[in-house]
Length: 450
Image 1 (spheres, rainbow, N blue to C red):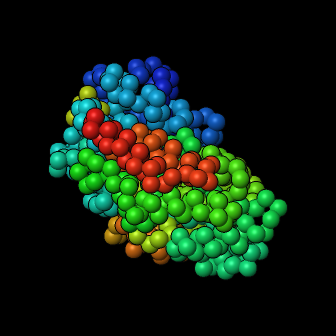
Image 2 (spheres, rainbow, N blue to C red; image 1 turned 120 degrees about the vertical axis):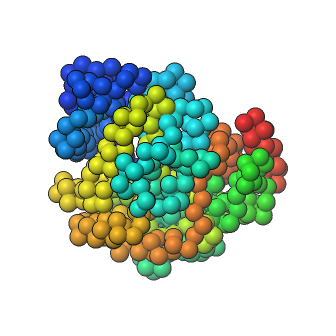
Image 3 (spheres, rainbow, N blue to C red; image 1 turned 45 degrees about the horizontal axis):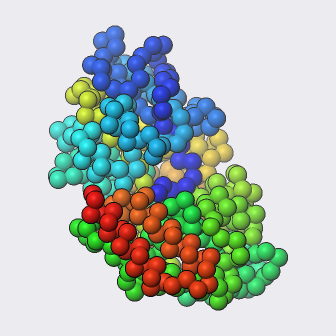
């Protein structure tokens, strides 16, 4: 799954737009030249409905083309950046842009189907590469070769309502650090009445399986073995996840009666001030404020309860295997300019973001290391316009957690796990042992077919 806010992202599904050329062809596959210039097609341009993001993207491409008059950038837009329904078809049909957006979980698959260019010989064109966190670079490294460049990352934490904590007699500066503490605090919050829910979780549309995975990581467990061949959910850690959810729902009555929730449901509850806690990435916070009626001062983030691990994800760009050497070099220069220069570009121009009312100072995982990280953090801090103190617990606590990416065949596995999560939240007599046994067998079958 992705993190859930609008991350300045969009995907092309057949419509071309160009900032410089009136007539070009969609997709890759030509020689990449136009009037003596190297032309690259790129996706993930924000849609026109996201007016500020669209303007920023266009401004940054125009600035890049001014600095590199030998390169033309043709941007394709739509939303979302990557549509799971069309992604594989575009790959198989050779219709991907020269430079195309991917989730971290896509990297191996794109390489396996031989649709990605090997970027290893060209990395000197990417000035920022060595400053990017190694664990993020490694996601796009397969058998020692580099096939993609990370752009953003996220990690899961516990999002909570400081106002409800105070109202329930809890210290909002001391969020729960264990699942037992989550249970206890959720009971206190639910006891406020008037439809207040202590803790909510997803349990439909594969989102329940996604959160099961995050909760399993927090307990120190894994979804599959290290070699990706067998399920590892029918374990004490897996039982603990389902038992905690079951008991919060039926014994504590702290999760409310309405279940089979998805992200929009839970965000509506939190934004309206009726929910105490749920698992989320930092990019939920501006969504809650801008779209759901929340208040930055009331929203805080803590590390994943349990203290063992957290789920991480993110995105980046890969380059089509059809791209010419000149297009690959141009693409890497474009990525540096747009996303990978500390304090500048589409995601890093914090001064511009602040000036236009966009949130600055949310606790995103750090993309850079060393001097680049120092520069990026200094500029971000200088332009912060959100209550960064509300996220300090998340930043401090996350440093000691094991960082784990999503399992292979994540969406198929999440669909299986959805059934287990929804069962314990909708049936008081749910048999946890049998649910995990059945789910484990189905996941083994998924892995065996790969």
